[in-house]
Amino acid sequence: MTVITFTVSVLCLLPQAVLARWACVRACPPSCSCTAERSCSVLCDRSGMAELPKEFPCEASAINLEKNRLKFLSERAFGTLPSLKILTLDHNNISFITPGAFKGLSNLVELKMAHNEYISYLHTRTFTGLKKLLRLDLSDCNLFSIPDRIFIEQTALKELLCFQNNFRRIPGAIRGMENLTHIYLERNKIEAVAYNSLLGLGSLKYLNLQENRINVIHDNAFQDLTRLENFYLNDNLLSDLPRSAFRGLSRLKMLNLGGNQLVNVSKTWFSDLVELEVLYLDRNQLLNIEEGTFENLTSLITLHLNSNNLTTLPFSVFQPVYFLGHLYLFRNPWECDCSLEWLKEWMENYKLVRDIPCASPSSVAGLDLSRVVFANMNGTCVDPTDLNLTTPSSELTPTTENRFNSLISKLLQQELREEMGNSTESLRNGTLLESEEGQLSAGAGGQRSQLLLCCAVVWLSLGWISLSDVLSCT
Ligand SMILES: *[C@@H]1O[C@H](CO)[C@@H](O)[C@H](O)[C@H]1NC(C)=O
Ligand SMILES: *[C@@H]1O[C@H](CO)[C@@H](O)[C@H](O)[C@H]1NC(C)=O
Ligand SMILES: *[C@@H]1O[C@H](CO)[C@@H](O)[C@H](O)[C@H]1NC(C)=O
Ligand SMILES: *[C@@H]1O[C@H](CO)[C@@H](O)[C@H](O)[C@H]1NC(C)=O
Ligand SMILES: *[C@@H]1O[C@H](CO)[C@@H](O)[C@H](O)[C@H]1NC(C)=O
Ligand SMILES: *[C@@H]1O[C@H](CO)[C@@H](O)[C@H](O)[C@H]1NC(C)=O
Ligand SMILES: *[C@@H]1O[C@H](CO)[C@@H](O)[C@H](O)[C@H]1NC(C)=O
Ligand SMILES: *[C@@H]1O[C@H](CO)[C@@H](O)[C@H](O)[C@H]1NC(C)=O
Ligand SMILES: *[C@@H]1O[C@H](CO)[C@@H](O)[C@H](O)[C@H]1NC(C)=O
Image 1 (cartoon, helix red, strand yellow):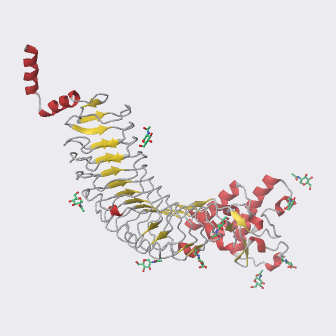
Image 2 (cartoon, rainbow, N blue to C red; image 1 turned 120 degrees about the horizontal axis):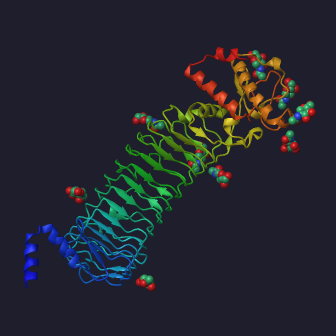
Image 3 (cartoon, rainbow, N blue to C red; image 1 turned 60 degrees about the horizontal axis):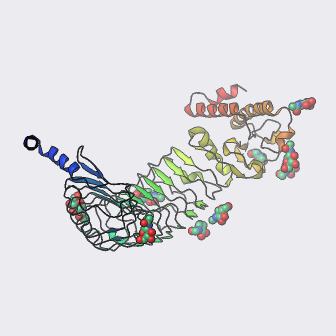
């Protein structure tokens, strides 16, 4: 008797919050554990549960039912839980959800139902009552589609995760959901993006469509995505894009078009992407990049062009030059003739590019562009294959450029002699092609001479030394 009186009187002295905590633990369902630190959490994960507990603590703010064997959710499966914010049902075996299953969870913010591989169908009224839902995870289920009006009450929804399902088109249900900021639809079987698939998504910042089967994007399909920042379209089947595919996406920071079948890059594609920082065009079959393509990409930091079929890259493609932090060009069949001389200079001066293995001409095949030294005749670059070994030196006008080149050449050759001993024969097949005056030539210089060369170029470009200073060393 005294104990009860004592308990009651203590309870009466306790603040409301403490009472609620006590109730949370007391009403904890069997085979669950409940903690009531800041709010009431009900942990029922990994407990082999095949059916839901009859009751949950009324104060519950989070319920975790992950990794059980739940198969079925009845109407009002969780009763009325006005404090519930987060409900986790990942990794169960749910195959059917009765319409209205979540009624009574009027303040639920996050619903996680990923990895329920037998959910292939959802009724239009599945989510009835969830008016505050901000985040819904339906990833890695077995959905082929969802009804167009399924989110009719979820107007506040910000994040929708539906990756790794079987969607063959972008669900019509997301159209007009103006509060959505993140959509995950990667690893489905989507084949096209229609002009109206993404209408009315004015808050969207993140859209992931990677690893689908998209081969057609209709004109203006992305026109409403004016706040989009990260856009994954990589690993699809795109061989072309509409002329103004990304028109109006002036906030876009990252665009991934890698792993498609693009052959030509049109200069109209990226006209509006003034905030784009990272562009992936790797793993396509690019042969041509139109002049002016990157003209308006004034914020670009990184450009991935590796693993394509590019043989050359006109300087004009990068005009005007705003950029860059990194330019990735490896795994392309580069033709290292004079048209790429500018790129070599870039490599040396800005250190933005490395790893450009040459596929041709044969005399430099296998070498990195940085190691190809372009010969100069009468002030004109001479392509490696065109160089005539027996050209008499008298035909060469000794210009300042020639003399400068000659200096570099001597540096390189000295290095080579040190490396290779005194056999000139061994150099014939490589790229070191020595003419009588030591005219510019070699391709396989040692690191020291490269360093010297780079330093000279940098010092020259910085104006620290003059050309005559350099030449006076000879
Ligand atoms: C999951 O549900 C499916 C179909 O409802 C059933 O065939 C399968 O045996 C269940 N698996 C487990 C582990 O209960
Ligand atoms: C978006 O959310 C705000 C509040 O978060 C709400 O007022 C508005 O109605 C929502 N938009 C729609 C289309 O419901
Ligand atoms: C790429 O451009 C070339 C020449 O401009 C054109 O002949 C070819 O058809 C284009 N290929 C594609 C797939 O657009
Ligand atoms: C770059 O932007 C200007 C101004 O918006 C536009 O006139 C021009 O066509 C754009 N360049 C390209 C290659 O689209
Ligand atoms: C690109 O190169 C690959 C491999 O060398 C080849 O199979 C493919 O046909 C090429 N594509 C084009 C458009 O030339
Ligand atoms: C170099 O220039 C001179 C005079 O301009 C010309 O006669 C000669 O043919 C040129 N040599 C080569 C290899 O172009
Ligand atoms: C190389 O130059 C020599 C002498 O000028 C000339 O006879 C020969 O035809 C040239 N060879 C080539 C491949 O241009
Ligand atoms: C350098 O040349 C000399 C004489 O021509 C020869 O005896 C010697 O073996 C050569 N050294 C090397 C490393 O090839
Ligand atoms: C030059 O190349 C030919 C054919 O590729 C080869 O037979 C020869 O041994 C090479 N010579 C040297 C010095 O590497």
